[in-house]
Image 1 (cartoon, helix red, strand yellow):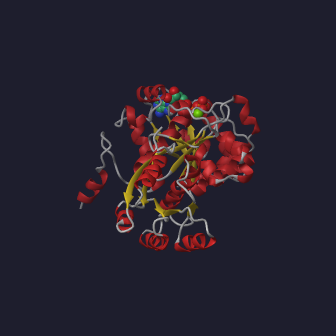
Image 2 (cartoon, protein in one colour; image 1 turned 90 degrees about the horizontal axis):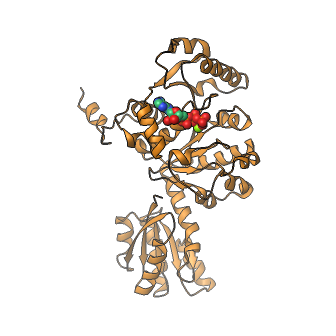
Image 3 (cartoon, protein in one colour; image 1 turned 90 degrees about the vertical axis):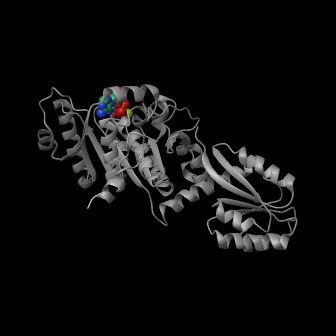
Length: 397
Ligand SMILES: Nc1ncnc2c1ncn2[C@@H]1O[C@H](COP(=O)(O)OP(=O)(O)OP(=O)(O)O)[C@@H](O)[C@H]1O
Ligand SMILES: [Mg+2]
C-alpha cells in the first residue's frame, strides 16, 4: 500500500517528548510522515519552509510563549493544523490555547489511535484545499448493457490517468456489487468496502469514510465492492446516492464503475453523474442493446448532453461503421478506443494500469485523450511519462 505523505513539525525542548511524538507519527498506518524537530525560536521558519501540514507544540516548558507561538504559526501558515500538548488542564490554559489557535489539545503525547483521526482530517482538509473553497467533485461513470465491454478497464485507467495528468484527488468507486473486479485490475486486497460505508451511512464521518478507502500506488483512492456476492443486496440506490455525495465533497473526481444491469442503483449513478461514457463495440447485438439503453435513459429524463458514446475495441471484421452506430443509437460516437489485447491482457493479469505495460499503446493514448478532455489539460506524455506537449505548443508560432 502506498502511504499518503504528511509533514509534521514537533516543537519543544524536551528531546524525549520529541522522540515519543516522532515515533507515534511514523507509526501511523496509511501515512508516511516526515517529522522535523524545532525549538520555539525557529519553529515558525521551519513550519513555513517545510510547508508543514501539522505542528505540535509542547506548552509545558513556557505556556505563555507556547500559546503566542501557536498564534504566530497560524498567522504564518493559516492551513497548518496545530496540536497543543500540556499537562496543565486548567480552564485558563485550555481557553488560552484555543484562543491562540490550537486545533487540538492533549495532556500527553497522543497514542496512534488518538492521533490517527485528526491526521486523516488533515489529509482530507488538504485535498479539499486543493479542490478550492466550496467546490464539489465531478462524478464520472461508464456503462454498457453487455458484460465484458471494457467498462472496468476503461474506468480504472481513466481514474489513474486523470490523477497522472492533473495530480487531482481521485476516488474510484466499485459499484459492480456482485462482480466488482477493481481489486483484481489494480491488484490489491483491502479489509473494508462500500458495505462498511453503507452500514454507517446515517452518521457518516469523513474520518471513517477516509479510513475505508484503499490508497493505490498510482495515487488514487479506491472504495472496493462488497467481499461477498450476496452482500450487495443490502445496498440501496439511496445508500449509493448518499455515499457519492460524501465522496464528492472530499474528491475532485469520483469515478464510478458499474455492473451491466440498468437497475435502480446504476440509474441513480447515471443520473447523478456529470459525464456518462456508454461503451459499445460494433456488433449488431451490442449496438441494438445500446440503442435500448439510450432510449430508456432519455425516457427517464437523463440529460442527454451528459452521455458520451465510446466505441471500444471495435471488431475489425464487422461491417458496422461509426456512422451506422450513430444512426441507430442517435448519439454521436465521441471516441474510439482501439483494440489492444496484448496490453489489455497483460495489464489485467498483472493488475496494473495499461500505461505501466505499454505507455505507447494506442489504447493508452485514447484513454489519455479522454482524460485530457475531461480535465481541460493539454499535456502529452512521452513513452517515459515525461511531459512534452506544453513544450511543443509553446514552440509553435
Ligand atoms: N480496448 C481493448 N482492447 C483489448 N482488450 C480490451 C479492451 N478493453 C477491454 N479489454 C479486455 O476485455 C475484457 C473485459 O474487460 P472489462 O472487465 O474491463 O469489461 P467490463 O465491461 O468491466 O466487464 P464486466 O461486465 O464483467 O464488468 C478484459 O479482458 C479486458 O482486458
Ligand atoms: Mg467490470
